[in-house]
Length: 234
Image 1 (cartoon, helix red, strand yellow):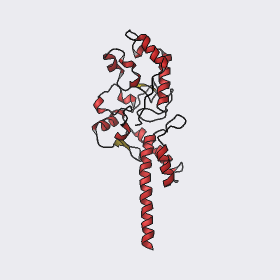
Image 2 (cartoon, one colour; image 1 turned 120 degrees about the vertical axis):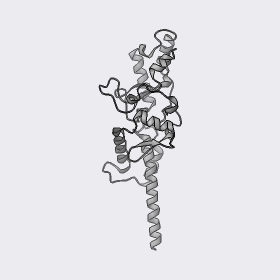
Image 3 (tube, helix red, strand yellow; image 1 turned 90 degrees about the horizontal axis):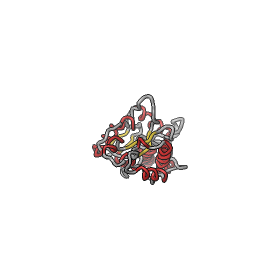
Image 4 (cartoon, rainbow, N blue to C red; image 1 turned 60 degrees about the horizontal axis):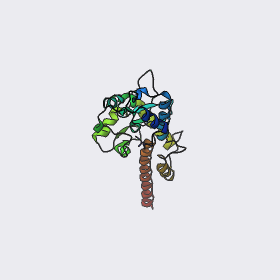
């Protein structure tokens, strides 16, 4: 999971919210399509074009506006709670898919137990999880919230695991699978892989960063072993 640093809500959205405050129109379902499109584009942009839950590459055609705290609960609290921009992120898949996706926002649905959910809006969210070179994800420290989040979002779904594993293999070993990164290049990429490039984050960037950590440790151990053998053979 990649930390999402929220920017300010679009000006026209704030203006619309003020115009409907304390009226029956103060409801997400009443929002004009033009305003929703504006919000959607802003969310995709501030997330660097990756899904807030799965880190899949997204744009406005392959994602939808997700309320982290479900809309229904927000509405029950009244006073336009489902209009809070700070509760919105962009997530795969697009709205209106015929079949339900087995992971991410579709799997989460209306589930909400805040103390058992690690939100991508939490500054420390990245530190709660650990990605393996085989594409799997686990809790970094065994905390209950992280384990619950993996289950609720289906982050170990077979499709996601395979897609992350493929991205890791190609990133570290090249398209042919036979050109592993050298230490210097791996270290350079480790410092850059989670940074924006052209406004975008790299798909599965946190998984790639964790895999680079493992690769760097492996290359270092291998170099030390070779050095020891050479020294012993003198």
